[in-house]
Amino acid sequence: METFDAVRTVLAVREYQDKPIPPETVRRIAEAAHLTASSMNAQPWHFIFVQDRETLRKIAEVNTHGPFVAQAPLAVVVAYDSDSRFGVSDVSRAVQSMILTAWSEGVGSTWSGWSWLQAINPIVGLPAGKTVLAIVPFGYPVRARKGTRKSRKPFDEVISGEKFGRPLR
Image 1 (tube, rainbow, N blue to C red):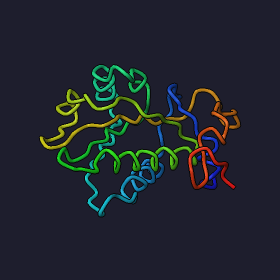
Image 2: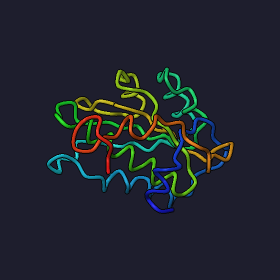
Image 3: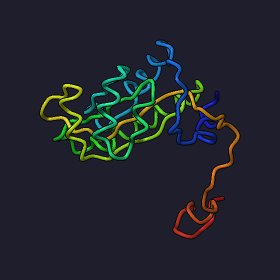
């Protein structure tokens, strides 16, 4: 899948088939995170790939915004160095890289949680000095999602050229 097609068609997926993700696909998702650019190349992140069903269940219990994580065959705990000025921005970029890479291979996902996820640290052995920003579950969608039209504000309402309110030419 071309990059723009992935951006154009990607949708949030919260229901997953009971089907494992092949190791080579898991590896590509991990490489997408690893290869993402970061401010000053600091790479202030750590990504914990979780496939163990019991661990996924425990993560879902403490992540009140994502009980569906328990049904995913894979979830990534996304953490950054707590003292990093650019950590939130940098790991957010990496999350999008993982989501688009997965989508291009037919694997759906969505962002789950938003900070305040300290209860996950002991579940995955995350040391002090790291902050969990998100949990990103991955899996094959239960329902086919490709070709679904996205609901977006009109282009000219959110995109300007040169100055606010001027159409992009």
